[in-house]
Amino acid sequence: MNLTGWLTPAPRRRPRPQVRIDLDVGVPAWLVRALAGAVLVAIVPPVVGDWVVPLLAAAALVVLPHLATVAGLTLLAAAVVWAGEPRLVTCAVLVLALHLALVTVRLTGPLGVAGLVDGRLLLRTGATFVVVQLLVQGLVGLSFVAMDGLPRAPWFAVVVLVGIGAALMAALRWVARHTQ
Picture 1 (cartoon, rainbow, N blue to C red):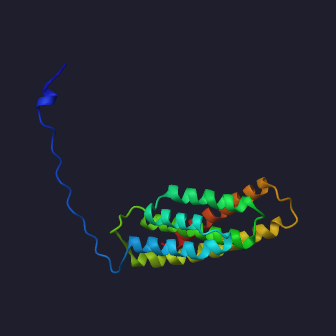
Picture 2: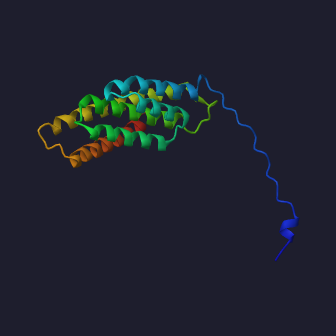
Picture 3: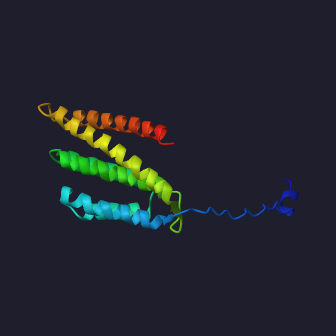
């Protein structure tokens, strides 16, 4: 047994220098999260008919902006859609809410409460958000047109959701390539 490793002090790391980034306009991360939570509380309860779950979901988004939170919100949205007869308005609002939650997590997840989000990044992300929402809401409408007269089997809903997800990913890749 070698005791020399116990007697010699561990090498010290140099302290990292503080980094400061000057932003033209910085919006606090907590404000972006709070606004996203407020929008979720404003749009989801009238459609779903429940206030408790959307309030808890908005609180989770504000307090814990992580992709796991978005995954949990996705499961809740799927449970709402599959609990009853799927309606176009319900699906459209839930897709909007999930996209908003995902964008909020991507923008503010790595930042602390006191972190700042660049205003130019918010504007660029907002423009991308609108384009993607136009594409996705059109796909939601087309999926309901396609389901009209077809069997209301859960497997068909899964196929439609996978198609919407694939189209969303393609749209996101297209927007990312053409907005840089």
